[in-house]
Length: 98
Image (cartoon, rainbow, N blue to C red):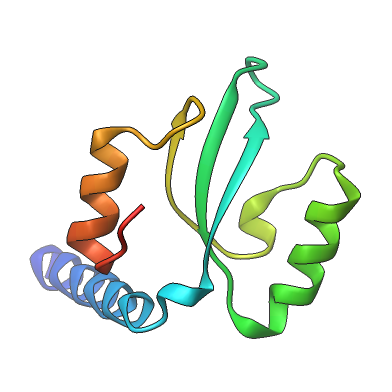
């Protein structure tokens, strides 16, 4: 039974990834300071259309924000440019080139 549940969860995750791959324009790159360590970080966030206005307003305000309140964080890394691992993940799972 546990194996069936794990397979169902994996199928749901695969379905979600395929849906995101169909809508790469809804994936946003966010450069921000990680509050836990003060380092510059890059986040790639998938934001559904009903949340885009609130997401954009929150970014413009420049205040601390929980990205997961607006969408799904697909990948993240530290630095000013995406790492090779983040580039590969976004390309493989979603067909997105960064």
